Structures are given as C-alpha cells and as structure tokens.
Length: 92
Image (tube, rainbow, N blue to C red; front, side, top):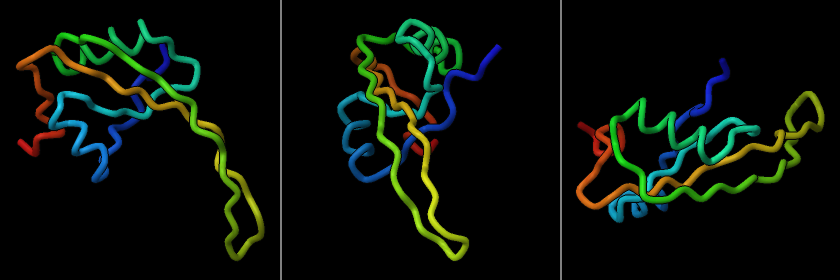
C-alpha cells in the first residue's frame, strides 16, 4: 500500500488558507482525488467538502556538486465542511 499523504505544507499563504478551512498537503503523484479524500478522512477524522489538486513543475537547482533537478510533485487543497478543523495546523 502506498503512502498517499506525504506531508502537510505549512507556509504563510497556506496558514491564511487554513483560517478559511482549506488545508494543503503534498501527496503522491499518482494519487486520485478519491484516494486523497479517504486518506485525509481516515487520518484526521474530518468530513471533506471538496478537493483540488495541482501538479507542480520541477525546478533546476545548482549546488557545489553541479546542476540537478527537483522532480515533479503534486499538492492537494482540501476544503473541509463548516466547523471542521485539523489540529495539526492549529498548533494544538
């Protein structure tokens, strides 16, 4: 079984989204919206209103060893029903 949710994405912009009930996660590149929904419901025990996904392009990076690339990755915007919250983002 593959791991659907890789990590939560916490930034200033995503914190503003969290106040509106939208949480952002990095997910497996091959995950479908239904798989993401079931994984979030099982992990956090919340009801989901909608999910939007986007695939982020790779970037070129340079370090002391030469040039490299960060691979493509996928993120999911998960909107919860009214009154639902995920404690992980609330700092509880």
